[in-house]
Length: 276
Image 1 (spheres, helix red, strand yellow):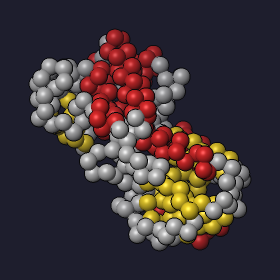
Image 2 (cartoon, helix red, strand yellow; image 1 turned 90 degrees about the horizontal axis):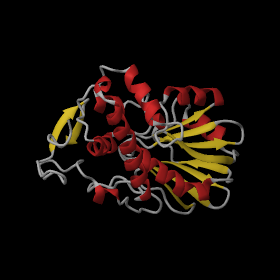
Image 3 (cartoon, helix red, strand yellow; image 1 turned 180 degrees about the vertical axis):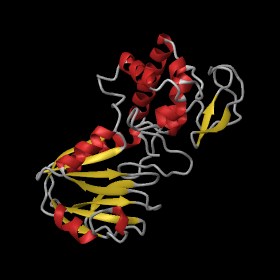
Image 4 (cartoon, helix red, strand yellow; image 1 turned 135 degrees about the vertical axis):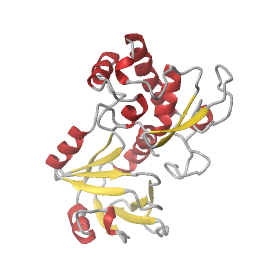
């Protein structure tokens, strides 16, 4: 967490307040790795005075395109959040960066586990990042045929591990891979090269469907409450999870208990009867 739907929802919530604004100050960077490889002072000097020309997303990265051609890349990692607050609002003890804006607002980066990162990239450095990521699963160019080509290039890879690989497909994580595989009726340990054309079509449709539904629901907030967006709203997709987090509960299709198994280092949830 967060995955593509949560990052997309956060990006959409921030865009109106950030687009066209100028960064006039940087505060509260008390955790140096947050902005490495630049030291905090150099990071602040580089972004101050820069106007935000674009607010977008690539995979799990939030991207602020600045007027000097640089890109401020923000990765929330496991527990990061971004909030726009009045400048007079004091930073929370878990807020490790504040960017003051020219309209009296400030962007607070809340990072309780200190895994989140802000990287100031040149245009060339962003091109390297972009090239290292797989296709966007909601882009028009991501088709069943293109997915089949990518699967055939990795025939011995297990589906769960492959779909988690950001080089294969950008933005998916544990929750939405489990949910997509259930909807596609595919076992997470299936070999990529074993899928028929019809199964590839089901997988493509399931990935697009589950991500679209999750964005509409503004993401998934689990019982830990880690993911919140905007002014603290919770995502509603947790109400629609069919296998993720439902270990031992009956499958909504066949009634067989949902199984949890560690696959590719992640707890994976699936129905042993429906998914083959």
